[in-house]
Length: 494
Image (cartoon, helix red, strand yellow):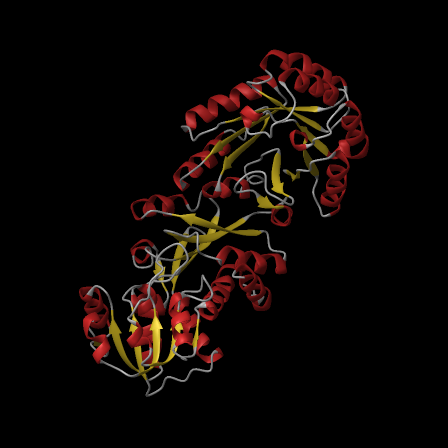
């Protein structure tokens, strides 16, 4: 079983020991002591740490050239490594390149004191998979555990690392193969499933992008992992990971929810690799909601009727597409106390979210008008509802209205995407209630303007929560812990 190591970074030995004991009490199998961050490092502090927590610690004195903090000069560093190897830590991390000339001597010294030698190499930049494999073999030839870390900027490269780790799981030497960065979190989530020696988890400030938290890593330890996630482009603004992680933690499920930033031209490759990545379900956001429809084996009623998928369940090689946006929007109207029967509604947008909104409004008995920056897309959406909605050209909006409800179903105002208003201020002033499906930031430009015009409104957080809870139940077969998910979502938006 893969051991979970909490990475401890402290600027003095006493604090490093204190943090280590706390992490071990919280369920870590090991701690990695990042000694390059310890300012008072010396022979006495090394021995003190070894006596205190060494039996369950990895001693790492990372050099600046391999991503470490500025520390001792090269000669001092070698002297400290000798002291470490002499001090009976559970593991010592030695560097393939930096320590090449002394690897043999240090390895023998460590072995004499029953310390397991990790030989590591950290690439500074993304490289081809064959170079990663060569580095892994070189580390394996020098140490008992081979460790290679490589930056990953695209999900395709993370998939290649998973395949490489799987093909190397039968090596006689133990290994650790890590993709660095947000695009490669899946390589960490699958560490146990791939037979890796150690899973490095964050404790306090993360020392590497993409590390799992200690809580998540221990929840996955020794159990069949369920990989869930969100696919879209971009996904940085999403708080779905925070929300679903809180739900998974509340139920203690061996699952993790990860963001996958997938370009449209790479969607098919991701879907083909989903089974290899142990993915059991994912949410779908812009721009993939309609494209995914063509790639799943089966659709539920809402997804088939609208031609839009926002949730996919994978089970026994079979993919089912669902549209939980319909459920989420309908329930959110109830929770906000909005009754739309026989009321006038203006929907802004013509994408997948807009389709779900229009569907619910029509079924609730509203009179719906639709506008979109691209008139042709609005017409296509209207056609799909047998012309039961009226399309308003964007340039005519100021001469129309009033409306009881205005729903923004465009990305306008989303954090990091677009900071403008989806409709002119005059149009906002003619709406009785403003419902902005954008939820991040919590107060969007549209809602800020509505407040200035004394118009009540709400963000899309309620819809996000309810559609997310429905997706959670589809994936796990358990009732979603809604309160825990709601608390986490609100905290993430502070």
